[in-house]
Image (cartoon, rainbow, N blue to C red):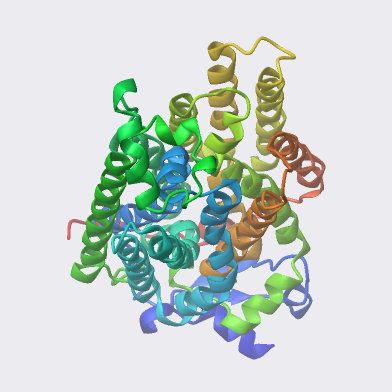
Amino acid sequence: MAEENQLLVGGRNGLAYGTVNQSSSSLQDSQQTTLPNVQIQGENNKIKVYKRRWYILTVYGLMSMTQCAVWNTFSPISEVGVHVFGWDTAGLSLLTNWGPIAYVLGTFQFSWLLDKKGLRPACLISAFLVAAGTGLRCITTQRAVATPLIHFGQFLNGLAGPIAMGGPPLISAEWFPPEQRTTATAVGLIWNTLGLAVSFILGPYLVPLRELHPNNTTMNISTIVAQGVVGDNYTNLTNSFIDYDIPKERDDLMLYMYYSCGWSVFCLLLFFTYFPSKPPLPPSPTASMQRLEFKVGLKKLLVNRTFWLLCFAYGVSGGILSCWQGVLDVNLSDHDVSQDMAGWLGFYGVIATCVAALGVAKADIFAKHTKWFLIGLYLSGGACFIVFVLALISVVPDTAVVLYSTYIIANLLLGASSPLFFEMACEVTYPIAEGITNLVLTLVNNIAGLVFLFVQLIPNIGTMWENWCLLGGIFVCIPVLFLYRESYNRLDIDIIVEEKPKEEVKS
């Protein structure tokens, strides 16, 4: 027990910023670790806030945005994927599914890397995986070779997901003062979410459907068969293939792959150039305190019931919602919603999510009142999605106004919850390292998404079940949020500790 106490109070970089006095019974609490008494010791407990923190957050954000955009590359251009590679719904779903599959496989390895080596090596490896994944997609467009290469590239990109999704709370803890932590976490999550918006707009713009002029239709049949899109059986050659210029769509798709790869390499170079794991001096008292050792922290996390309530609420609702959005075009196509409209719905929904996350991050008045705020967001956001789903089956008017308004407002409300979940998880599990906490949080999110996407692989299951599953995933989390007991272990320390003047460093 004395060893665990020492772990809590040992300052990072050899600096002793505080002492934690704690009873053994408190340490043995399986639900939460409370740190009631904190005292400043020593004269070298200097705290500095560096302006370069925003550059660090931006470099990370660019990689996070790119990883998400690469993950969602083929959903907004699914029709082109069918034309060029002959993919079916199951194949398109598997491309999306590689994200959560790889996430599950890589979460604990990256958690250990963050805890032992820090942000820089973890982000460098993640950026390399994104660049390597996009590079594999540039090799060829020959169906027999391109399809497995694209799938493996999506898998490599998915391995970067734990850092792309779970990194913001650790960056905010290492680089930002307490009053800016929620803002920094929200901005980091917004970067990742913007990747969806980029893919929804950039994909259809760079890879549009190329309709042929009627008198050019028959000229393209031999070209289509020669490219191996539908094989040698002419009876399988439907009008959907005959009406599109497949070679031109193939060229557009390849150009899109080149652009993605070039941008990913640029992001990798940014990390090589300058991206330290943490600043020379910490921005807050808790940033200076040593977290629990990896194995100890992981064991405590596994028995923290309050944390697992948050995991369930965020994981089930967020995992289903994000993967539902990832196959939005495939889903809505069965309800006579065009690829173009689905793309714009996805784009505006993502923008609404970003605006909401920023708004909540700037409203620090929600600190210590997040539980009831989250319940309100889930009730109102779920109600909007009910109207959206009913419009799809024409129970309520299925006009564009109804579809756009309900979808955007629902994303606005539910999007505001993400940064709050991340910060609440850090608070309730402190002094467990933020990297371990949030990667496990997002792991549950990806497991829920993985199950959702795997169901799509069932033959002839259709897509309407996805909408009912989305509603169920949102409303089942509301009773769980009622059971959650708020706790602010980390914030309470930063408030209790006697504040020293903070120097804004220009370097």
